[in-house]
Image (cartoon, rainbow, N blue to C red; front, top):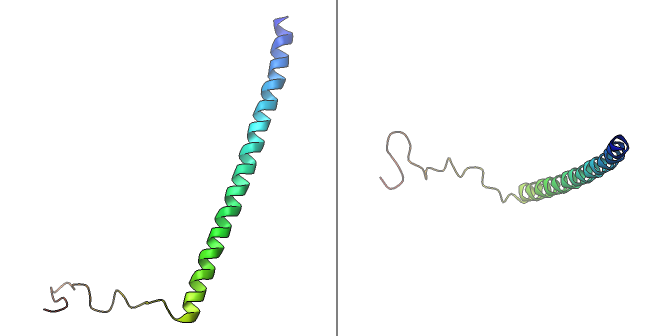
Length: 75
């Protein structure tokens, strides 16, 4: 009797495990799609800013930061 009950419970447990794996697989797939869409959006925004010339690539080299000699702006 206990053997029959164990076998039936094992099948139900396997179904629950399969169901859980299916949900996880679906959630991972949807997460990947969302992340890819976000990355495409960031790439599109960056490329449109580059095309417009609105990105400032010289912001760190414009002398606004102190250099190693202690000669900062206004000194």
